[in-house]
Image (tube, rainbow, N blue to C red):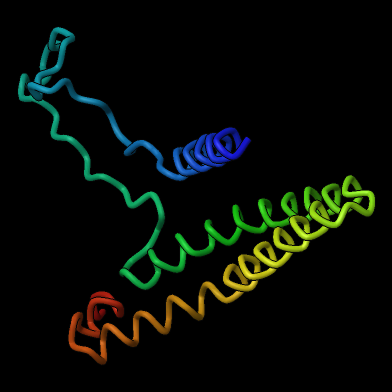
Length: 149
């Protein structure tokens, strides 16, 4: 059962993450850089340059990218937390007074509550880790601030 849930979460995560990334805009050019169609009269035979890859997440620095990824994780985690609490509710109902099943349902509830608390405080955790890395000298503050305009 745990493998099925893990597989379902993996498939859901992969499908949602693939929706985030978009293809670069512009004409596609074959790997050799040469066009496959014959040139029209008066047209240059030079290969058309590949247009620059656009930023799919619209982040200008590492901080914005981290917060974007955290927002996605919070969105997915919120859906999973709601489903988890519904499942735990079923576990309580199905326990029908059985002490071992009630104990198991209470443990699930505790773990889900802790996971939800971590989920809610995810942005704060990212900020704390960022400031810790900066104060320890592992990274420079300019990495998170992006290019100055």
